[in-house]
Image 1 (cartoon, rainbow, N blue to C red):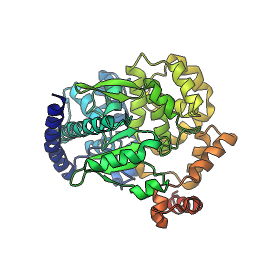
Image 2: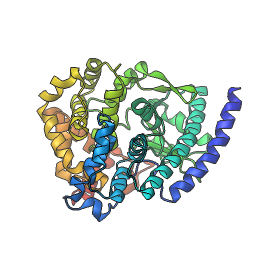
Image 3: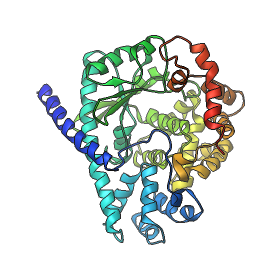
Image 4: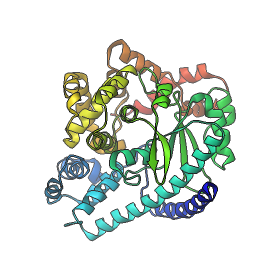
Amino acid sequence: MRADRARRWQIAGNRLAGIAFRCSARGVHLGKRRGGRALSLRFSSGTGFLNNEWPVLCACVSPSTSLEAARQALTGTFDWDVLLEAAEEHSVQGIVAKRLEELHFENVPQEAREKLQSRMRAQHLFTLSMTAELFRVLNDFSSAGLEAIVIKGPVTSLVAYGDPALRGFGDVDLLLRQKDISAASQRMQSQGFVPSVTDSAIAAGKIPGEYVFKRPGTNRMIEIHTEQTFRYYPAGMPIEMMFRRKRMLPFDGREVPALSLTDEIVFYCVHGAKDFWERLMWICDVAAIAKNRPEVDWNATWRAASECGAGRMLTVGLLLGARVLRAQLPPSMVETVERDQGAARLCAQIQRWLPYGAGAPPSLLRRALYRISMGEGGIRGLNYLSRLSLSPTEEDWQAAGTHQGRSWFWDTVRRPFRLMRKYGSNN
């Protein structure tokens, strides 16, 4: 019975993925972007966007905005094309579409309505195809004795919004222990995926930003993270504790392994901090979990964040929700958040580049100061910056042509210079 169901999922997934891939080819955005993109001049220049479309976007996606407040925001003067472009850049089109649907698409131009509905159809199809892929991989890993946790993507969408297809995503992410990555890569290849990191690089001890596996001829990708690839926890990812606290989450007719709510929130704040909180989606997710999951133990969440050095990352994530989306802080966290003046300064800085998404990356100096402050400043912050600056990724091996060798020392030495070349020209 289970094998027959898995087979039906595979057939359906392959068909749906083909449809979703064609939708993507026609310009329907299905998930995250790798790197920034050139934004339209209407979006990226002047104060008109900040005064018109940006407030409307924030009102539409905030979990704390009433329907009446959203309706009032949508009666203002703004450009629908710019609003939808910003929603796409920040991966919140699904949330905007749901809010407009709740308002029965009042005063929404036909073209904008059709564009959003097309996007949601494509996202639902893509979610179905990736769900089938996820179930196959989890079944295969389980049969091989490999323990995995599903993170980000549809699971976060389900936890935050109650709908696995509402939140935009472009791949499925799994968390494994580093010691299992070689066996996991072999299993993924046996299922027909092509790895971004070769077996020889894994054997040589190379640690990428993530292990990406793509099914040829499709837009389906699985990313595997470990405690060593996800290096942005200031005191290290507490991988064993996260596996001990994991829970089984009902997901499309079966249960999948997911992070505990405590670890979900901390992980997401670390993830947002890692990428400079340049996407409104990440702030929405944290605010939505805080509002929609009253069972969260915030005292336990604060302890878990503090133990891995991510206390400031948690306070920044919550404070951004309050400042950008006017979300309410959890009552037990109000004093802690308001007491962290470093978090307040970071939020003010983030709010300057946030509206422009990945199109306005901070300069090298600003990035360095940001990392120090996010690592809670002082010696701890400097140690955090130093570790990140001297931890090579696949970009460093590829630039040096050392992706198969054991030249970790030279990769480490070259990394700061590559970062200076990449970000040094940003203003």
